[in-house]
Structure formats: C-alpha cells, structure tokens
Length: 148
Image (cartoon, rainbow, N blue to C red; front, side, top):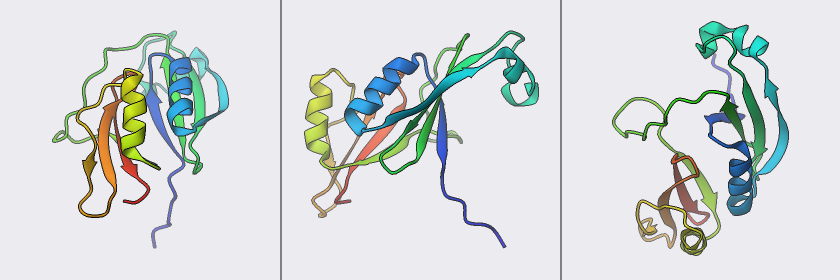
C-alpha cells in the first residue's frame, strides 16, 4: 500500500535570495521562515547528491506560501548559467500559483516591469483567467484565478 504524501516544499536555486524574498512576499504573500548557510562541510558530506567541487557552500532560505507549502531557496557561492525551461524535455518546467484576480495582478506586476509570456487568457467559460510570467531569475511561473 502506498502512503499518501502531501507536498512539503519545492527547492529552487536562485541568484539572489533577498530579491526572491521580496518578490514572492510582495506579490504572493510568502513569508520568510528560516535563513541560514549550508557550509562546505555539509555540501561536501554528500558529494553523490550535490556533485559540486570542494569548497562549495550555499546560503538557503525557506519561504512559506499562504497555504504552507514552502519554497526552499539555495544561493550557491558558484552558479552555473540558467537554462530556459523546455516543455517537451523531461523535468520540471513551471510552478503554478492560485491568486484572487489574475488580470488585476497582471496589471500591477507588468507595471513593475515583470516579464509575461502573454496577457491573461480566460479558462473556458468559468470567468477565471491564467497567465505565465518569469520570476526574477527567469523561472516560468503560472498564475490561475481562485475561480478556476
């Protein structure tokens, strides 16, 4: 018998933790719950997991969403260049957040310079909308109305 397992957190490597704390707090109500450092002894203690060179370390932070699912952020001392998500390539490519009013939030975020892939689109005849944008590091994020 398989055990039911609720989602606890999603890990995301970022270029600047402070920028992510501000961004996800401002637009989506995420709250900083913990911040610290994974020292080189911790990272080096499991080389089969991290696969990083000696001396690597990472700042980290946990941001809790309003429903309790956390974003675990990592800011490593050495970063590789980001790659754009590819839809038909196996692996993670986007997160989806439910918000009260997609068109209203779209206007606010676009006025602040956030890059969107397209303007909000209706979700059938439900009166709800959806849209995709890029977060501060270019990660693909979807927004859906609470009506959807």
